[in-house]
Length: 139
Image 1 (cartoon, rainbow, N blue to C red):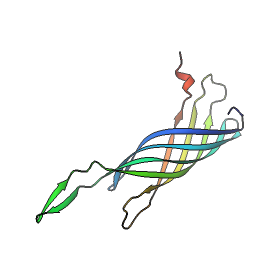
Image 2: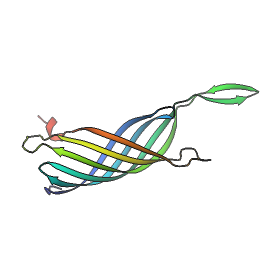
Image 3: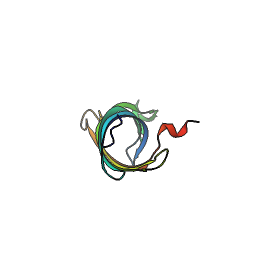
Image 4: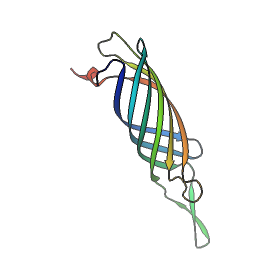
């Protein structure tokens, strides 16, 4: 899609997040998005996505066995994430390999979190960064 004002695109992302006192999470997900050019390199975008989330609890887990508590080995649990992202960006206009500077606000649901009483856990993330085209790394 090479239209200068409207772009449809697909992402593939690998990420890590930390929720203090609750969990660390490894994320592998994809998003389908639409980016609309606004003015001189600035753009707004919207993305919908879903994927895999591996949640690792931030607390120790114990089990009661024969009247004694034993520490349980916990490597985390597989879960699903699904959500939406709103973003603003600026892409360099005259560079041979233009960098894209962005700020994104992401909302996603993590499921199932605790099946018995909190099946869906809402999360929000703020992303800020720089994107580079793959062509920048060709020789």
